[in-house]
Length: 228
Image 1 (cartoon, rainbow, N blue to C red):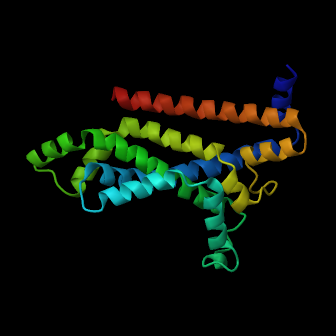
Image 2 (image 1 turned 90 degrees about the vertical axis):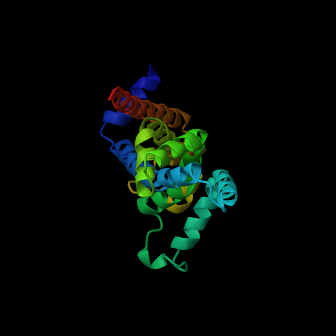
Image 3 (image 1 turned 180 degrees about the vertical axis):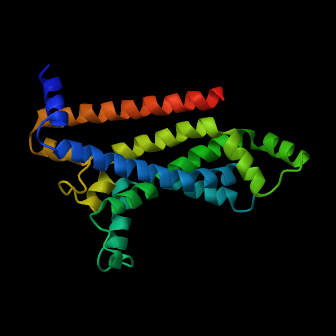
């Protein structure tokens, strides 16, 4: 009961910090998932639906990037965006934009690999059918995107789950700045290190509730698309 009271106090009390943290978390996760999906799904379709000379190498590369440690992704983005880095003039370090870039670097290979595996199972049969009815080039990509649109929703949702739960990379490039780049995971880590376990648990439960809510909304969308 005390935990529930703590959550309600954090969400609806006079202190706006948690509401700000939730807003930053959702902003970062939604944009990183969006950009990763826009890149990863078409790339995964092209990789899974086609046979070409460099496919084995690209497949191994994508699978290797699946294991990219978040802190390494954060380090790469940190070096790019630091003042002495090639993109330092944009002054993006310790901003939500920097966190989104790091997340895209982590999530895109995940979405690409899942998409390629999904499409690759039936790619040969589908390609033979498309060639038989005279569909070639970009139209073939469009067909795959439409035909697999329902399972793609699950892949996007999985990408969102990875984004909202990530801590290492966003801590490095975001800096956990209060009211600016502090997200749920970095806030939980900070509160735990400070010994405020009740506050950290309340944050964790709130994060789970947000994930459950987003899952419920996406499942409704997925069901509506399937019914159509």
